[in-house]
Image (cartoon, rainbow, N blue to C red; front, side):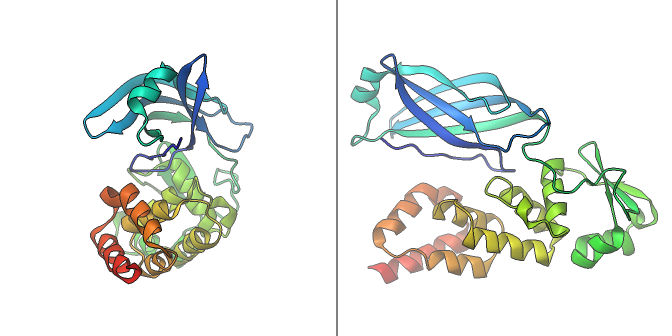
Length: 281
């Protein structure tokens, strides 16, 4: 019996595990929240869509609303009877589960802050407002490490003459993590925060952040190879793409990756995979 986790596009959430189990002769499906516990209350008001992929002609869909607080799981109790699952859902003895999670509202933080960018921050001379939160930063440091902020603070932008500006369409949690990495706190990068940091750095273009994310992805990340290739498809990095492709050693591995990620790969990654397949024949 196998389960597959599919994350929604956009920023990374902390729903990192699908739990499938038998209870009272029924099939139960849960999403588990993986996070570091801290003193802040963390909750989400979510809309869940559980899609049971069975065959090309049949899908059973259950949609529910719920709330998750402080590490609790949320799931589909008695999704179907165990006998029904065995008779109509299993394909070649395997169960494939696809869970899509759409976040409507988040409160609190899923991890402890490594650096406080509040009013107590030393040597700050500028305020960046992100999602209703104020980040007190030092302009010169950000400008030295990011061409985006160099232009914002010292270029011809009107904002450069102000003491504060708002960064629109930016998630404050992702921005907190990005700033921490920019300030040398590389522990801010993990499998849960990685995509959000890469998303922002795609705009801010901080070389140090790019290098640290690449280093983590290649040396420490526990993400699957297919997930890593999906990230490379979103946030272009030819060097990293070549390194990941070199990890595909067999035709079986190649087929598994293509089957799971073909719809999410960029054109250049798809073409590189096709070329890789020819060398595995």
